[in-house]
Amino acid sequence: MLLAGALGVLLTLSALRAADNTRPVLVAAKELPPGTVIGAGDIRVARLHADASVLATLFGTADLPSVRGQVVTSAIREGALVGRGDVRALGAHAATRVMSFPLPRARARAVSGKLASGDRVDVIAVERNTARSGYVLADAEVVAVDTRSGGPLAGASDEVTVSLVVDADSAPRLAAALDAGNVTLVRATGAAALPDLPPFTPTEKAK
Image (cartoon, rainbow, N blue to C red):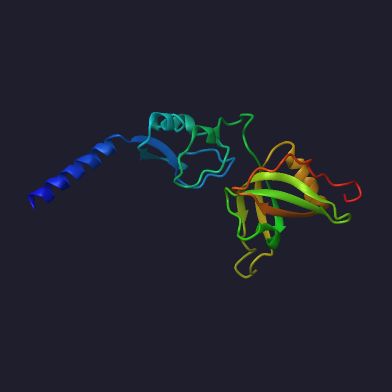
């Protein structure tokens, strides 16, 4: 009994010493999609045991005032660590643009499962009049997928609204493809990068 008690004390002391070695870091209090301006309720403090090289990539409690008001540049899931590369100052050149568009539900399922925030997708377009096809975007980040119906009596909607991260080049291409043809999403999460492909643009006839 004495031996067991002594062992318990040693284990408790060991756990306390380990806790003493943790450092306070900032984590997401809820899911933060790209474009979110961080407010007081978006982040919280957690404790982490990590070496100095890892801690240097994260925010500590002293950084809390400066992190508030910054813009999220890549999706941060609830409870995930907030890295220094995940946010930018409001109005910075790297601030993220997001584009939303509706798709038929079958075209948004992306192969074998439903899309979710944080997934990566390729966008493929097929012209209605010419049957030409090609890649509009590759490895685009999904910000949100809205599958809500029009109301409690409306039943399930046949469309899904998908929001993707875009830039000044890809946004016009995506808009033109949506106007001129049928767009399909291909899940690319974890897939190898595609070789450089000429971006798909609709022909004048298809427009």
